[in-house]
Image 1 (cartoon, rainbow, N blue to C red):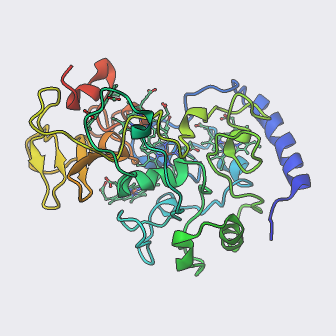
Image 2 (image 1 turned 90 degrees about the vertical axis):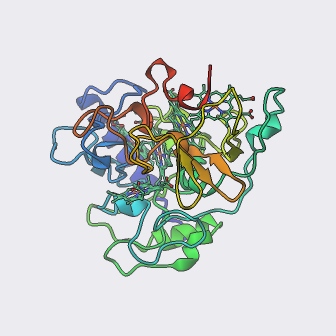
Length: 312
Ligand code: HEC
Ligand code: HEC
Ligand code: HEC
Ligand code: HEC
Ligand code: HEC
């Protein structure tokens, strides 16, 4: 059963357009209204989309309540303390994993590539469970405090079944009509980009570059083995018990969030999305400071991130 209510959506869109102009929004501006410091709550990965303790800030998350379930908790869009997914080897993972195959960077066939590339590893699959645009951003297994739990949701492929379960959430803030995705196809009425793109039907910040898709040929390779004893690459200085390796900047023998890491996926240490990004945000200069842009573990000012691995 579809929960799409087109009449309702038209009314909402009209309301949003007028609110957008009341806030003096600039069309397709990329900078976020979130402060990007103090914690994940102040970043775009707060999918309740309410910047805490600052009611004057847009977004007023209720604007988005028609397009994804507002679970009222930040972590639950990705993690659950109980009833987590065993389909992805990621910490207490609460999200649906669809079963499609990705087009990898290897298929581009560049002359320079030397290392083996496999399908994205578990860490990359966590990001791609939203950023490949095939799964609704609110598609979780265990909804908070509601008793609404469906383990089958962990590996569901069928949107009708997924949305039927997501429709069991009874939000406090008003009805949710749709469970939207980061789909680059802006004509898909189920895509956040139907508004959040230059082609969007209202003036909203563009998320076009966030819609990575299932074709990874135009993205820095992931699922790729990190070379050792190769003069074109720096040598990692830390190893975990699991066999992940990292650049131990502070020499404390711990894989800290501000340190670039390679995940041991069974094929040896590999670059994954989390090699470069921490989805919770990383301070640029100690506690309380502004996060590195775009969730990067290391600032890329002067290409510092790239040159952590590459000798160039
Ligand atoms: C947008 C998705 C997302 C959200 C929201 C999120 N996390 Fe995570 N979290 C991840 C991913 C992905 C990993 C795995 C990182 C890795 O494999 O390196 C992770 C790992 C962790 C870990 C273990 C590794 C570490 O970084 O310490 C903890 C603890 C954690 N998250 C806590 C939280 C808490 C608490 C919240 C809410 C305040 C939260 N996370 C919100 C995606 C998320
Ligand atoms: C629960 C869904 C979800 C997961 C899982 C997720 N993201 Fe996101 N991410 C989003 C959405 C949605 C946006 C767009 C902004 C928004 O709606 O708040 C976004 C935005 C971003 C941005 C842009 C931030 C900015 O301020 O410009 C980056 C970078 C990013 N995500 C990287 C990642 C990486 C890397 C991972 C995995 C470690 C990840 N995301 C996992 C949903 C997710
Ligand atoms: C009907 C149009 C529409 C749809 C669909 C829509 N949004 Fe929005 N969104 C807006 C408008 C308008 C704003 C306020 C203007 C702005 O901040 O860009 C906004 C603001 C936001 C912001 C604040 C921007 C920032 O970074 O400060 C986030 C985050 C956001 N929306 C996420 C989402 C997500 C995630 C989805 C899909 C689940 C979604 N929106 C679907 C219209 C829409
Ligand atoms: C080798 C390092 C590296 C890897 C691996 C990597 N990223 Fe990024 N990513 C970056 C950098 C650097 C930026 C900032 C680009 C910019 O400022 O334009 C970025 C930006 C982004 C953005 C914001 C959009 C943009 O273009 O600015 C998203 C979303 C994102 N990455 C998601 C992912 C996902 C999902 C993966 C895994 C499939 C991934 N990244 C793997 C380095 C990486
Ligand atoms: C976590 C380590 C790491 C980081 C950080 C990193 N790379 Fe890479 N990069 C690799 C690996 C491993 C390869 C594969 C090398 C090979 O096949 O010989 C690679 C390959 C490449 C290639 C060659 C692709 C080809 O077709 O031959 C380019 C170009 C590149 N990276 C650019 C960048 C840029 C730009 C950045 C910063 C935004 C960056 N890398 C950050 C590990 C990294």
